[in-house]
Length: 309
Image (cartoon, rainbow, N blue to C red; front, side, top):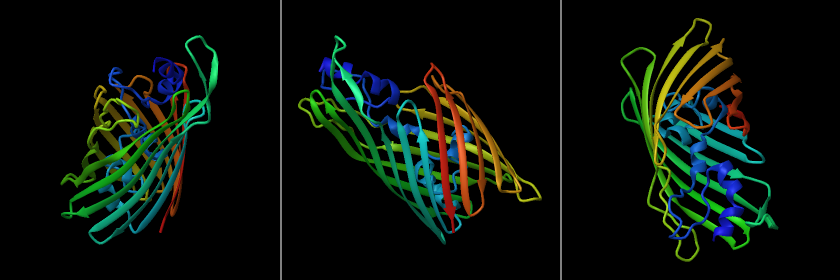
């Protein structure tokens, strides 16, 4: 098992994704790819997004945000992350009356990685993939309050290792709400993500792992201008199992309601602190976000294309 852990050290360092562990390997977590977020616009706002989400990406950020969709919305994001890691999101949302539904897929993939033993000798190639399939429902409880929930099937796989192929799968749940406060333009929101029981890999004597359960709450302020654009300010706090509490703030300006520029700041994270985004939105949306990664790990690029009808 020690040799396998050495082979997968690169994957762990780059993805924060767990590797199979037996009962004598404590302290590892699984499915942490679920922390990577969804959508370039959210990234441009520093991921201070639980009270802002109003499109198909709400299936990740806050299912109550699906009530912000006018009729139908579809969104897809390609995230070129570290090295050869690709993080993908595809979502759909529909809103009718006091009800809204959504569906989404999240995936994290990499090309084959060289595996080496403790002496540095080449032992072959291995890879991994992480997937999540979600269904969401939201209900407009009052004119000011919306509530929502998500059911998510998650799976993590390691293939081609010297000790065989391994996988882990299970179900998690999200619960969220948004409140349009009496203060003009101010919305408050909170979401509890990745609730569920422990999971383990399909190997003998496998250790049980907890999900990366997280509580994120925040508030946003939208000030429209006479030309259809306006300013959005947002601030969130995030507490996730196994991590310190982090804070994020973001600002976005929409010129004539179509051309967007945004920037965000995070605190409490090891390798991220700022992000920037630009975009165009009408029925068709195109957003791009850039995040520099510290510790000489490179940078993160996201592009989102969406359509509303």
